[in-house]
View 1 (cartoon, helix red, strand yellow):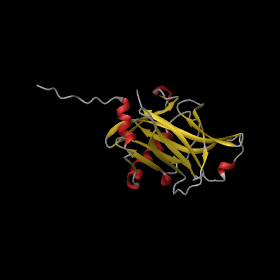
View 2 (cartoon, helix red, strand yellow):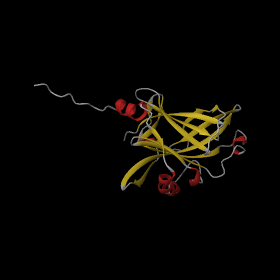
View 3 (cartoon, one colour):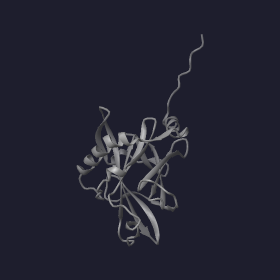
View 4 (cartoon, helix red, strand yellow):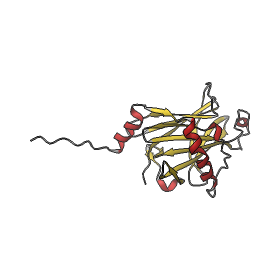
Length: 204
């Protein structure tokens, strides 16, 4: 008798399932209308936030891949003029929420205790979603993306690349595979700048 082989889903396999086939979809407006106001409300309940974001629900943008996803809520009034502030100022971009994903540093996902995990009910189930706050700051005439987690200092400081694209929302994103273990969330700002946030599966 031959025994059937069991397929074991390792973390790397799961990431391949999420990013490998690029079966991602833009989250439709009707779903955003249900979820985004609750996300903004829960963010406002958080204490000691390093950046204050006045969430612009009407311009939220998100993408999902299977049971994972990422969603951007821009700061109200985000404009090209705001990005021209002096280097000493941090321009608030908005909030990045992720489902079952975590930023990665040097190929390793960030530990849960360094993230701001926020409880929220989605489809009658309670989830803990990482809330990341995004800002941009100039350094030597270059723009850098600041990604804040739980603490007052940036969790990540990432270079922006200049782009020239037309986009409908102030902040938009794309999700893609980087390696067997990691994916990437590419954040584009006003069609002018783009930065890559490497991500992996969230572990608790």
